[in-house]
Length: 568
Image (cartoon, rainbow, N blue to C red; front, side, top):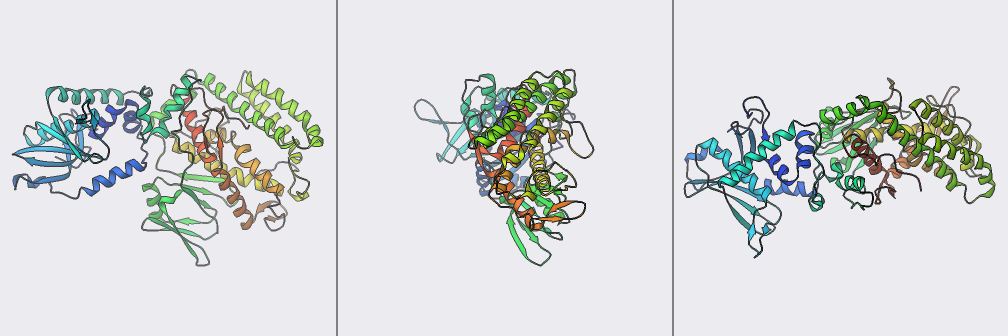
């Protein structure tokens, strides 16, 4: 036995396979691949409940007790079997009538045969049999049976470790090794019911894959509507984030503090001259909380996350975008992206001016030109042409921007031309800060999806920005920031004097103005809308993540859904 998982290797060359991985394999090969090969794990309520169950079993005795009183019981016993290439931790091992019996504890219910007799599920039978084989190898004894306790039914099922079950274990090990050597994911399971209880459904997106294969198929919602966690923005210069147990403590320069439980935080965003301790960073890593650094004007600087993409996903991404057929793939994705952006601009102008006949007449030429640009973009022969169409569409959109603003909006907050960094007008300062927040949100979604932000398909690589982040941002500039900002301006929520700091060379948001923009942006991320392709509602934050995962499907054998969203 050994507690070192790296020791057990088949033939001294291949890394060991976890017994829990065999359980996943028997449940769904795609689940096994995502967890064990791509190292994707999502802990939902059922996973946490299962952990609590195993912790409640209590600490037992170690292997040194094997020679003592043999009514004994050993819990969380770690096993390593190099001959099989397995490592694992059996829930409980007991000695009964001089024999060692492995026990597995499951929260759910047992399988029932035709007369109602409880039976073990095949996944559980293979798991407990694997432990039996490892015990035999470790202690040189014969293990004739194992047992599974189903807590929902309060029944214990005995499992005979016969030759057929032993062969199922070794066959599963062989299959696990085969899949581990593949670059391609296994297909989505044909059993839809398995997906309903799978913690990785939001990553795998099986319903969306079925919709891709059959457009008439109506996908069920397995992707959560919203993330219950929020973003912690640290704004005041000189503020510091520390750790106290499982909480973040933000200390401001004036001595004031605020506490934030880590379970409620999805990301920490540090603005300008703010600090975070090493202990707080460890807490972020332990709880899959991304950390992002942005400047005082909202420009994204860097990100830290514990869920960066694993090698298989990055290899697929690179091969798809820069391999043999990479140019065609990049053009196809870029067409979809540019068409989606221009069409959404056209639809928003239509919607924003439908109640005002004078404005509608003023924007009519712009609407006509945007419609022509959509048609041309659909048949663009190269990316350079697409950039030209997109640039023309942007000039048309900004030319009618003031027609989207109400008469009550003061002249200081109206559109006079786009200036970037540094902004030289108030509207550009608000736009730039919001786009910086959007870039951070998109980066978070890309990293959570395991994509490489430096490998894009449309934007030209630059040292100051990641191409894939800029690509995905284009889908959401209008939806996530332009529209809420225009609404806030029309409602008179911004003061041109107190919300901005004006100098001879630049304009930036004041601390009050930044708080307003952050509140407006975070509120937008939590708003829900009905996705026009998958047909269910989800927050804009989840929509960004969904599009990142649909993009990854474009080169993982299930293309067709990326960039099909449109403003209604």
